[in-house]
View 1 (tube, one colour):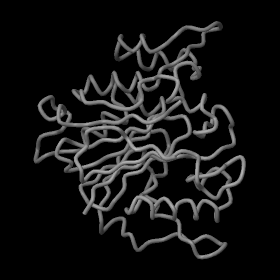
View 2: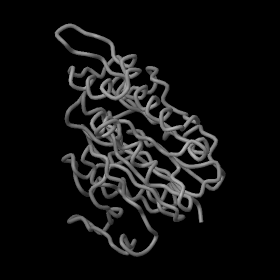
View 3: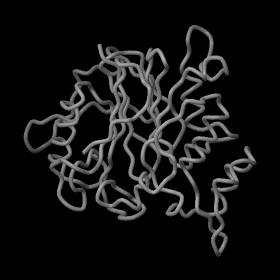
Length: 276
């Protein structure tokens, strides 16, 4: 019951977006909760992560996400050795490796799964037509907006280079493939005027992603804002979330975790990796 991205990635690039089905966690985290920071039983989270790692056949690196724009470079060996395991108090099932504080990660290595966790925020997966690197970004509205029009998506693209040429340049950005996963939809994401102002200040077109409500509130189209940002960066191959109801975490309680809907809930993950 997990989601396999429908995007034209090369055969050696694999990706997955989990749902809430198939894990060991009990309500309100039922059942495939992959977040170890939400109050769930650590043994259940460990079992869920062990299943996830076995299912994808790669080592997922879970980030300490803070709604920022920091991007982490992941290596197969060295700074984040995969011999490091966090043990849980109950039993001997290991957690998968944790990385440093960041909201996006990239790698050229094979067998390393760039992974982000969400429960309303937007997961964005990246690769290229050649599949020579992969990346994952966690895009809540703060990270997506960033500062001065440079948010987590732009920062991720700037960190990936072929030689000395940034992929954010037009001739290279066209070769990038992006997939947008489930997030809170435009009929459910109510925000204040400061959120709209943060986007419209650097791009007047962002106004089309907001619908006015009473009392100075707005409904925001998070996936739509991401598509605008990617287009501005020259990324034209964008797949996945089209802002329709089927992609809304808030509206699909049986399929997705949603912090805005339930407050106490689990986290699902989007992950992308290269085969050896």
